[in-house]
Length: 273
Image 1: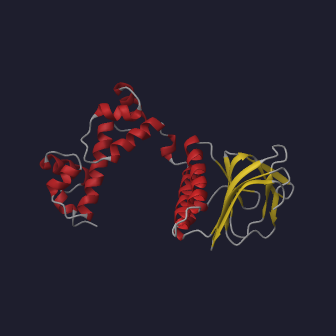
Image 2: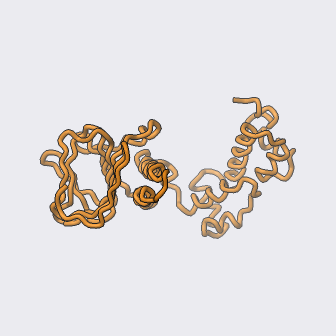
Image 3: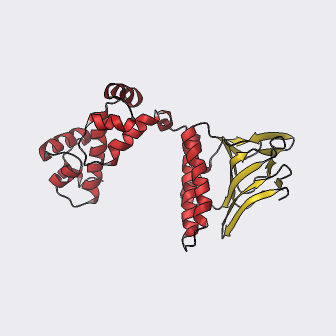
């Protein structure tokens, strides 16, 4: 690696190498045969440039790079910008990560992912930064914490790859959905739910139905019944206890709503797969 380097952070563990640094205008790395692992690069400031033959592409804070094992690597600081602050990780993915590594490709296998959604971009970069910080902790499990942060970053990136429908929902509405799902034992109340979204009750109800196709109360009940299904499968709680933990004061009413949702009563649900 050539060029000016500042704020260097580099750490290495078996099958996992990562770092964060700022490079000057002469920085360039070329690996014609790639590496034997995956490499993800996130731009924290300035801009980089990725090359493939004579083709070049500038990579700024709204894009990230991903190289698969064996893919040729040629990247460095964008000469016009003159500075590239980047965080990176070489890693061997855990088996369940593989579906999250199917990024759009540019010029022969170089993965380049645009991150136009502010929420995804902010959380992706936050997770990558947290990966580096976590690994510096003086703890025996520091690398595991770092890998968890890398996994979190890949999950955020995967939302963008899949163009997940939740990304198109107004963040205020998603905040209310989290509120409704966060405490199943809380009976539905429209006013605090609207406050969680930062909206008036009338405006909130309209936007929620427009975004989700259902009313806040219907969404709340669906979330609470989903939790009831989990409790019936995974616990030995009695029906009235399940009802109470899912915000239903009347066990008989709970049973009626449960049957309507799942097609059978709670007592039978315990025996289903």
